[in-house]
Image 1 (cartoon, helix red, strand yellow):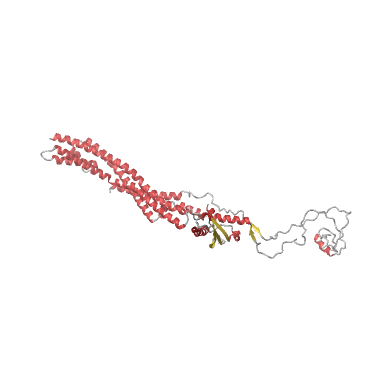
Image 2 (cartoon, helix red, strand yellow; image 1 turned 45 degrees about the vertical axis):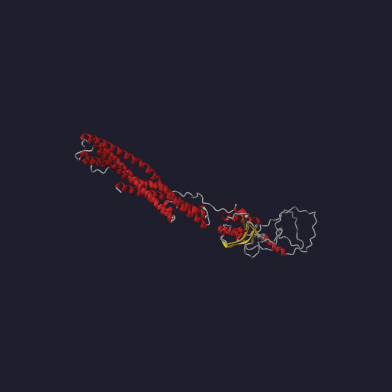
Length: 232
Length: 270
């Protein structure tokens, strides 16, 4: 019977590539977009994980060296060129310190305020730089299911029109269209789920790094403030 | 985009290619989920159908060899009934008179008697009083029509015997046709729509396809409230037949289903 023959061939065409190839062009566009979104999501996730790991290791290393350093100027010369958020916060503090203490009369209160402002601004800038790509993850995680749903709705509408055209509602006519339509939602969820998970995890890690930078800045500010009193 | 993002992009692209490639291969490799262990066979529900011959089928087999009558005990006391026929023909095989007329041939071993064929020669010999033997009835009726149908039919006709189908078989064929129509028949719904019955005349080819568009003979059950549904009912009835074609019907009964009338109503759709 031809029904069984159809079923046999349809079962063979349930692979992702075949589902994509037999889809409508709108659904194809949705699928391509969602696939790119998925690739971009994973690129951000992997790149972010690598960078965060590197950042954390450098912060650990920097804090160790900072604790062991005796002379601040000598330590500053050593770490000035480092491409690390915490080194930049340190450099911003040192630079502001030098500017404020180079003159004759030292305004202690004003110097403390400026030091805090300069280092806080650097921390904020570094955190912004770190969290730059995270909004992509948030966007993809929020939108991809809806885009996939749009592809599914479109595909199911199309398969209903084909049912109407063929005057036949047997499973062999309905199944391929619905399968390819549901494939769009599958890709949408496939892109969205890692994006949402990664967004939440990475937000948490960025917050941790920000808190750590702030702690370092506060500690360094306390050190400079102490030296400011001794200077006077 | 710094180096770590570049690395991430590369790894992501590679991972997606691997994943979807693997999925495609996996779908190709998995056994077909709807393949059947045993291939479905087509079942025709016309097993009641059988040909009934409308003419007498001549017996093609040679009649069984006639059995010799058993000899009964001779009853001398019974007087011989007077035969009205002047010259009764003796039954050739019941008696074995000596046949001296057949001379032994040039065989080295002369045989005095010849097998029963020799009896024919004895018929020509004038016998005024054939010796009759009493025969006990055996109950066997074979041989009653000796001389009339002792041999196979001499008919020269080589056409197949005309065959018709019995009522029960025709009903069975119609049931089969209706069974094949049923999935394609969707009558209109509405007030009194279930009272409509459309009669169609369908002509089929030998392969089960439709020879010509089915003709509506009539539609019964029309009322004032379903007047508007009549044409739709007829249209759908014709469409049901067209969709159901080709019909799968036993080929040897083509004469019975090449041209038939069928009624479609609400009950068929249930």
